[in-house]
Length: 110
Ligand SMILES: [Zn+2]
Image (tube, rainbow, N blue to C red; front, side, top):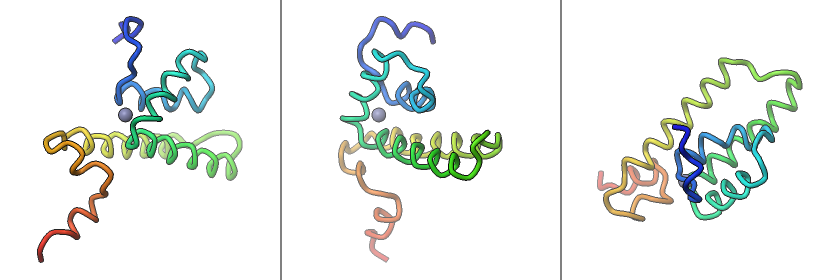
């Protein structure tokens, strides 16, 4: 970690890691552009981003001061797991992408 200055491409791991900072407005505009570019071409990350942004809106609506630590941890955990799935299924590229788990399971013969 710490040697990310030498590449222009933001990978999924970095994009997801920075989503929080992005939403908190803690990134430089240069980084924001890179994250946006990644989200533009990566729907799994975009979904996570949309989910997180929506969640923040809801939370901000309810409690303007702080997000409970427990909730934050749960969200981070959920995102971690979600992204694990998308990265594990690298075999048949594009085959699994864009489907959700229930759809895949539902499509199997009973
Ligand atoms: Zn991605």
